[in-house]
Structure formats: structure tokens, C-alpha cells
Image (cartoon, rainbow, N blue to C red; front, top):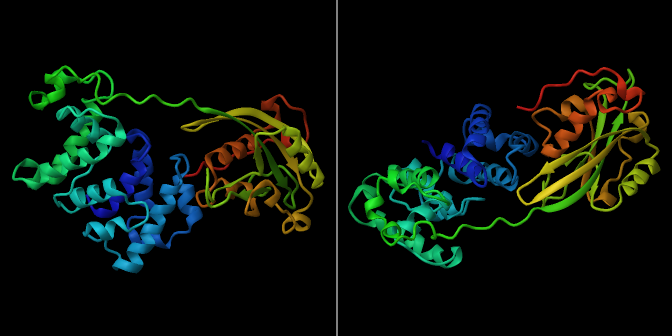
Length: 365
């Protein structure tokens, strides 16, 4: 696998399941087949392509890395570990993956799966923090001496990762099916079910959030999803959904506060959207939202100030375009706009401009 493909796939796979990543990876490579194409892309477009994978800082780092590779390394990923480690978002594991999988160099890598295999293989006892250094030492030692690891580091590292992902599972490892069971000290000592200790996932925080989907009519009037313009706010460059766009909203607090803010802008409430839940790794959002109609676009496009709500920028965008592949909407923002496109009759709400039969634009690629 080439270096570009390794970096893209490894950053996608951080905190994300393989079956989720496969389609994203294929679409990504079709859109940006190499470093020059990715470096030339707009960040909003990159974030839009990433929508649904979460942890968006990975996408920003990937874009920054592409620019650095083009500008500093002539479009070629360096082989040197120090130079690779200086690229945005490339930690020791990713550096090891690139050097071994792409360049065939004897470079160690330790991710969660490899750590579990090595912990049991060598019967290492301790918590994650105390074992980090010994695990890397064990992984590096195999590549320093003559043997299968040094002869084919790419296959060796991939075998360790696959073994941890399929056989040496966190709970109830399948030791009878393990090809290296005879070398496993944890199995020999009866410790395979107790080391490493399984991490207990922290309870998800419950978050209340409220949003206003503000539409401004096109010349044909409100009701055409390809022409109606929607107000979007850009989140700050740090924190959750950093730099992404969404309908203006607020977390926690009384939903009437956002409703009163919207009405103070002179926007007419049209209907409430069905409540929805949006689940992240450590948070569960309970979301309420309403659809509002703004005045003619020409009187409001340059006037909206979303800074009081914590946004760093605001813009009006055709609704169909906002749901396209270049906007950089958060996944929650996508869900809110998709809900706004549904006829009000489906929501059990009353009649009005929002009840017009609407054709939904295609979902983002």
C-alpha cells in the first residue's frame, strides 16, 4: 500500500470501526487520489467528506499534512521517522504504520490490538500508562533481531493487528484458534482473561441542545429546497465539531431562550421539528429544533450576528447546496436540515409554507 493510502486509512481508523471506514476510504481516494489533490481541496469540502466519521480534527490534520507534504517534501511522503512525526496528526503509531506498511522498513507500531496481543504474549501486568514503554520495547525488539518480523515488517505488523482484532479479543480470547498460543505466557499462566484489564467505559453525558433552522425565501417563495436559503453558523476552531457549520443553536439552557432570540431577529416561527437524539462516543444529545422564516434575503444576508451564540461566522446558503458535498456540515447539522425538508404533515404539525411537498436533494457523498 502506498504512503498516502496508509496515512488516510490509519487516520480514518482511529476511534472508528473498520466496517464504517471502508466506504469512506473508497470515496476519499476517488475524490482525492493523492497528496496534491488533497492539498488543493478546500477545508470545508474535506470536512464534508469526513462527516459521519467523527473526531474531525483527524480530517483537519490530514488536510494540513497534505499541504506540508506538497510544500515541504515535493509531494512525496518522507521515509525518515522524525520527518514523518513532524507532520500534523502523525503520532508514533501512524509513523510506524507508514514506515512498515508503505516502505517495508523495520518499524514497530503499537495500537490497542497490538498492545493486547503483546501484553498477553509476554504476560505483562499493569495498567495502560505503566505498560506503554515496555510494550513499545517488546515491539521494537522483535524487529531488531533476525527473524520473520525483520524479514517482512509489513506482514508482521499487520498480523499482530489482525490477531488482536479477531482472535485475541478483550473478553474471552479465542486461545484455541490462536496460531501462537504455544508462545503465550498469559495462557500458560492462566492470565489470558485478566490481562490486560478491560477498560470500563465512562457513562455518556446527557446534553440538551436547541436549534433554529432559519430559512429565507427565494424569489419563488418559501418551499423550494434547492432555492430556499438556510442560515448556518460556523463553530469555533477548537472543541466539538470545530470549524464545522450548522444551524444556529445552543447547548443546555431553556429552549425558550433560543426561541426568543430567533423572534427578536424578526423571524417568524413556522413549526417545530420532531425531537431527535444524536449520540457521540461520550455524549448523548437530546435535540429540539424549530423552523423559522426570515425576511427577504437581501435585507438579512449581511446582518446576522451569531457571535452571541458562540459562532465565529455566519452565512446564508441554498438548502440543497448546504446538504451537498462541499459545505462542511456537522452530522447533526445534516440531520436537522434533512428534517426541515420533510413536509410538516409528516411531523403532525399544522399547515403553512413548510407543508409544501418538497423534493429532497441527494445526500452528501
